[in-house]
Amino acid sequence: MNSVMKKLLLITLALGFAVPAQADIQAAPGTKYTSSRKLGRAVANILYGVIEIPEQMVRKSETEGRKSGWSHGVVDGSRRALKRIGYGVFELVTFHCPTYHGTFKPPYTRCGADDRIEMNPRDGLSEFPPELGFETYFSHSRSQKW
Image (cartoon, rainbow, N blue to C red; front, side, top):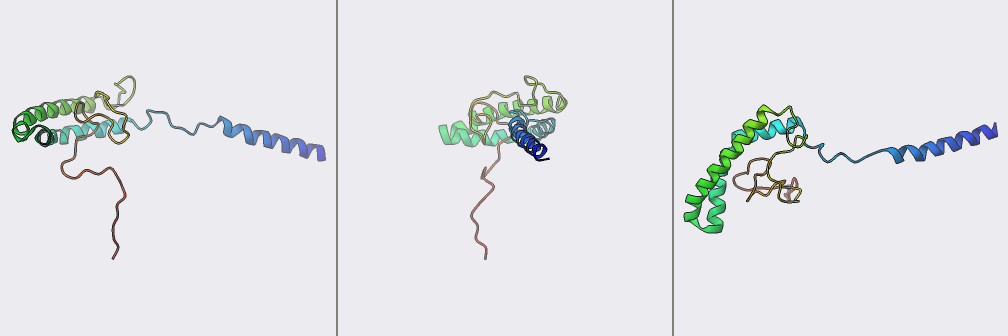
C-alpha cells in the first residue's frame, strides 16, 4: 500500500510539472484583428473619413502656416478622406475575408512601432479616423470627489 501511494504521488507530481510546461498563455500576434474589428474599421472610415479635411487643415496650419492650411491642407485632407472612404468601402465588402497577407489587419502603410497609434498619421493612414478636438489615450484621470 505504501509503495502504491509513493508511485501515485510521483505520477501526480510529474503530471503537475509537465502540464503547465505545455500550456501556451500568449496570444498569437494577429488575434486582436478579427472580422468584426475589420467591419468596425470599415464603418468608421466611411462615416468619419471626411474628418481628415479639417484635421489636415489644422496640421498644415500648425507646421507650415495658415495659408498652407487653407490651401494645401484642404487638398491633402480631401485626398486622404477619399482614400480612407475607399478603404472603408473595400473593407466593408470584404470584411468576412482575410485579405491582407491572410489576416484581417488594415492594408495601410505601416510606419511606427508605437502601441497606441498603429500607423503614422502624418504619412500613412491610422487604423481609425482622427478625432477632432482633445484626444486622449488614457482611461484614467484625476478627479475630485466632493
